[in-house]
Length: 153
Image (cartoon, rainbow, N blue to C red):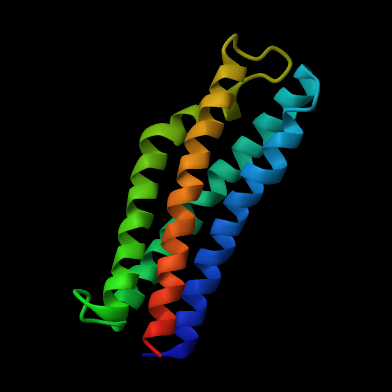
């Protein structure tokens, strides 16, 4: 097993999870303090840019984590099992994101911030609740990845 590969898998996944924690803990709470129009403008911009970039980051984190599970096999015990569980949780987060968060994000990204749709704030609140759940799953995945990589050394 290559130590640089493990470091890359952990770095990509860890920075992605950290980004998602920052969105939940810092960015969105500050957006909620803005007045309606400014909030709508910032939310639309962030939804658009993160909506374009995050799918690649998620795919890369999953691919690297799945590869690390393969490298630390057998995946039915020890380090391989921990990393395989991390990959499964990443897959769950991706499916959940595509099914629940992406449609809401796309509505917010496409809205006219000067005249947002009537339920856009409800969409944002719903997205935040779903995102909080996703952050928990991603954090568990990252902890499992780190545990497996360290156990495999």
